[in-house]
Image (cartoon, rainbow, N blue to C red):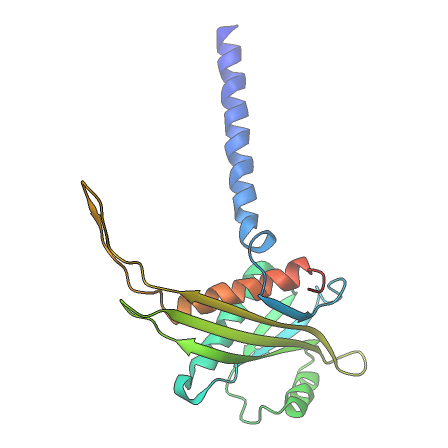
Length: 201
């Protein structure tokens, strides 16, 4: 009798931990922060089976080349989230006018295109704050007239951690996180928005 009780207890504990692991695996894209401003969002995701092209973000002159990194981070986040059937990064397009991107996407049979703009890109230090602000637009390019499905802006800003003196110990300070880390956090927000389809804010 005692062994049966112990076996049952072990089974319950194992199920508890297994369900906890499964729940945690879904957390990054089912819970968590959304973009700070969602200007346009559909009532439901009509494109979960779509082929999507993500382009390098435009960026300010002082952050030349960082727009490609922002596009790559968003592409990775969308692939991980499973919001769409296929997500492809399209780097190095010389003519980034919207008309050209739509024409190219139709030739390659993409359903959606994602364009973005890296608004702020500041790398922090031991005393300075890191900040990244990004804006994206998700545009339907097949099945009729092009239409804007999502338009949102996300921002991350993190100061350095200062050292602190306590009575019996001292914590070391840390520099502000890299802009790449903040880009990933913004990309996760955008992916979560497209996966969970929040209401308009």
